[in-house]
Image (tube, rainbow, N blue to C red):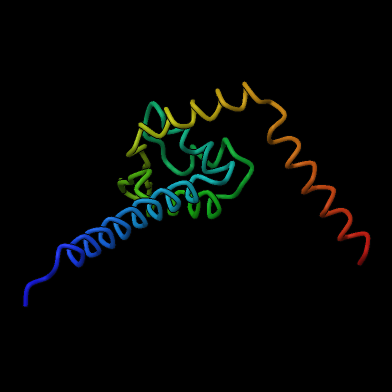
Length: 134
């Protein structure tokens, strides 16, 4: 049985939609992995050289297990890579192109300095209102 032109077009559209959805899901997963101030800081620290967990822990207000969890999440997302030397684990930035994206975000924030402040203030006010009811 031969497929009609309409059936072939429908199948092609469905395949294109699936591929598009997968691409969007991948982007969302990558952005989710970056969506924490500590992880953003870690990415910046790995811009020029690999670093061991102990060096990275010294620069952030968190214990080694917390920093390790953040690094593991970045590694799972393919943003950083690691290598073990004895007992130390060294991390390096695997996708330096993300630094350009972060720079673009900085430019956008500089051009619209109040955009995030308004949103944050609204969330803070809402949280305070909820707590005062309790």
